[in-house]
Length: 452
Image 1: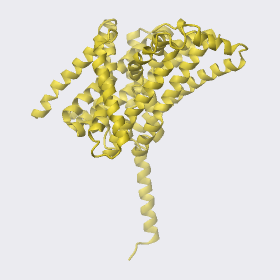
Image 2: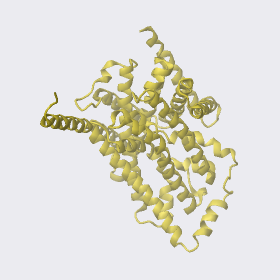
Image 3: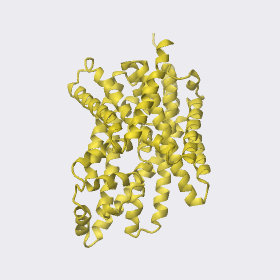
Image 4: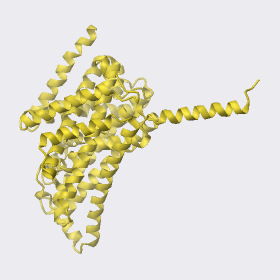
């Protein structure tokens, strides 16, 4: 005996309503991509690119392409891990399940340290901009941005995703506008070809510091690409995790690469790279040279918008990884407490407290303590990528995909090599040593897990 058509229709409508209601409390597919973009495109693009251009000249374009493909390899290994574990948890959980709980502990807490310092750095930079714009004390401005990010992250996850997606879209549109201005100049400038040729070739050639400079800045660029992997943390909280992982692997690295390489190419073509000073925005330099009205104000607003977006993503990632570590038994159980909208409120409060500590360190010891923390944290993304690649490599006998296994081993060798080399380089020695000391300290702390 079958049920009546009315009962069947009612059942289908109820199921549809339940699915729609469930989706309202999750991230949309495009939110996941935009949260990753938000984490990558911060002050590091609008100001940090000056350091890589100054270090390698026009050859920096090859460095960005090389770093982009390396990060893509890592993204593919993370995608393989997610597929193997049926999208349950982020790559931190996958490391824990593959290499053991202690490895998950060390990887998770080092990754948290990285993003807490990143969030603090974005807030410090934002505080300085607010001081220039409104004469607000930098410390007060930094703390205000931290509170703003806390309020945005305390929203239901769907609303948070919409706020971060909007900020990220605005950043991409701004970069597209910048590249559009460059194309307009090329099209309408009578001697554009001669000027571009001069800018690229008349200051030491395409490779002014030798071919080795192409490779020496790659570690720095990999650090600026930190955030591509955010999609693997955010996807389990979305409506279609499997599809989001696929999009993260296939699209995000190339979206980031297009906007980074496109912007840098525009800068190199429109202005002599020898005029670019490390620590000063090359975007502002180019826009001033083109006599763009209100160039300084435009660049300041662009940078502030990027900072707020990156800070917003940083806080999201820290709170989710803290909750995940709690679920794994690698952090206090209280960090698993969530609101009715599934927002890990206790983890958010801890994240905010840690970010405030970073800001205070920056205020009272900007040239020593803060600078060292900032440099050391950058090396930790290399460690995270190393552990994720090692996890995928360890599963080679269970996943019959020889090419991916080969790429995972390449990633292990490359990231492991960087971890060893950086402490011996004169420019990164102190930061590299401190990062290794932090990893060693977390490894010692993880011994307590085996006793419990």
